Image (cartoon, rainbow, N blue to C red; front, side):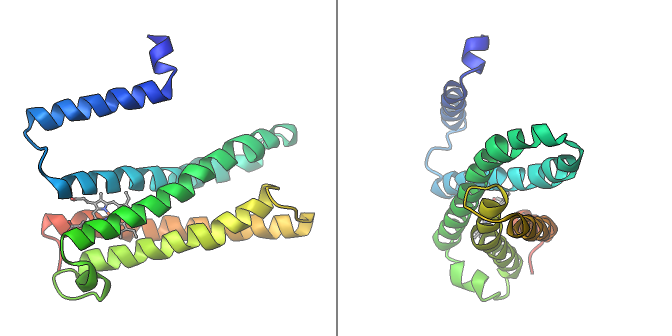
Length: 189
Ligand code: HEM
């Protein structure tokens, strides 16, 4: 039992097998949009889950961690978390754009046309957030964590910039998530 649950890949395969059973039981195989939306939400959880981990756990706790233990976070945990974080963001954008395209409202949403305005606002908020991840948070984190060379002053400034944009994304995630779920619940204008 411990051997199985100790192996993440085995657990993921078991989850997939269970999904196949559910799809068969519910006769839901032919719903391509549902499948795409499902992939979109899984990627979104990976991204926003780690964003919330950084903001609710890592950033507030780091000042309390004794200096000699800090490298455990900055050298091992944070780089790994940032890997899943930035790729989660990229695949959330990709799958989200595909869902909008397959549902025939990609242009309407991005131009904030009536009927698709709520999801359009959500998509723009999430696009700004993904831009922040790839072009501000990640380059600054690379300096702050010592993945690329930087002097102490540059490192400290980079850590502050990364923190500000990570907090900005937490702020934007609140209306963004309402837009994502509201569109399908009749909350759209
Ligand atoms: C640029 C990034 C994103 C784009 C382009 C995008 C696009 C979309 C689209 C087109 C839909 C379908 C809406 C509809 O059926 O009317 C959707 C739904 C959804 N998205 Fe996103 N999204 C993005 C980011 C995110 C993020 C970061 C999350 C976080 C978890 C997320 C979670 C969801 C959820 C939960 C739904 C609702 C699914 C449903 O009710 O069917 N999305 N998104």
